Length: 151
Image 1 (tube, helix red, strand yellow):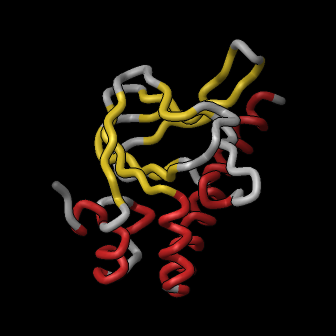
Image 2 (tube, helix red, strand yellow):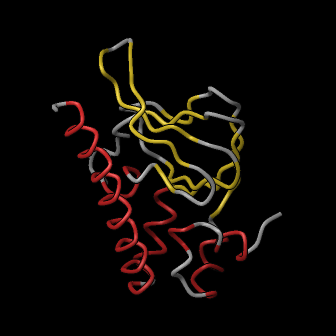
């Protein structure tokens, strides 16, 4: 079993109040994946948002239909699968998420998160601002990789 203190270990959530975390707790589940198992693949229906409780996850993108390359790796406390919240019309993941080690993740169904954010606009603002900051930092990593490739 887990509680709000476990949720507070997730970087994206540590800005939320205890009351907000209590609401998040009600829609949080825990899943486990084995090393080398795909959590999701590019273009899969983006149903869940995930945060790492234990282990490492690689975020990958397809180079061709049969090959992909790692964009970044994430560890404990990091969140991924933002497409579940950002693309309500198409809801497709933009890349692969693959367990590098055995992994435990918190997961939230996008429709449950959206309902919480509509009910509590302050929580919605805090969460989406944090997501925007995380996406910005990941784009900076990709930008640096592109610059390195073209030097």
